[in-house]
Length: 126
Image (cartoon, rainbow, N blue to C red; front, side):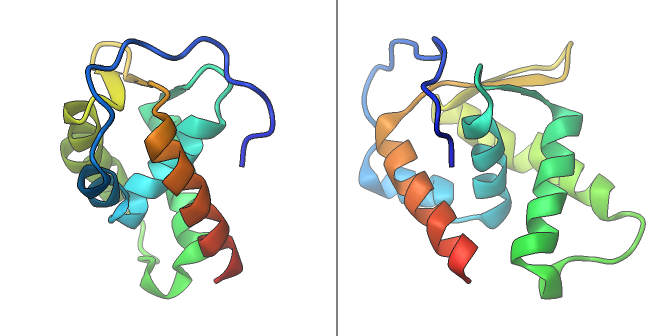
């Protein structure tokens, strides 16, 4: 995934998420795709539009048989991100959303990243 060191995107995290929590966060493919995108950003920041585009691209790459072909596909993905996946990640302390600027900032989480990289490589091989 990312080859370079992350700029300062770490913040004080109260506790490392449990393994159950990490697997719960990674259990949904679109949530993983959003995390792949944020993890690859040097500053951990992306707009909702950028996330939507990248999640749709990952969907087409990794799950083409399950990807909707209609014009509403991108809007469905955006709505899921805004109302389901990003709030769940924010509740876990993995990211922050700025509703005003429609940006998301990922906060480095080593335990999550270990499994995220593993998931990414497994999906690449599928």
